[in-house]
Length: 178
Image (cartoon, rainbow, N blue to C red; front, side, top):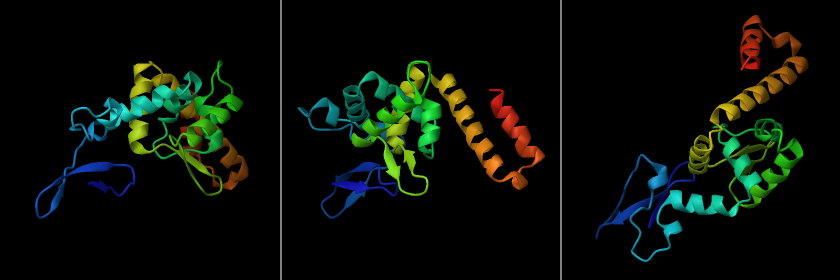
């Protein structure tokens, strides 16, 4: 059987012993379930294979958005996703459309709140990050993320001008220069 870990995403294979079942804790989430029985569909043999299969079903713009969202380890707002995932070939409205597709495909989760936050499950984020690196997009994605962060900081500074400090101005300037 499977044990559901605390973050709700890691299904860890459990070996059965006559009197009890012992969880196998693996460091590499993407190698889970690698000992599937012979004849099992390859996409079901490992978590990585399942993610690769799901990723392969997406069209190229959705794959790009998924890869670019991997820079957010704790999730992001819709606006931050639009800033971080858009470029000359994919505008912010197209990113929003692809974000809806990714939510519908259960590759991106929406955490309710004001504003709602969009996040990848950790195993999905790790796979998308691998793809981001493989496509040579990591540096550009980090720059877009930094610009998105600066935009949020500027909005916050305008909304709360008394809470700004010289140090926060220095950090914002540093992010803008990236």
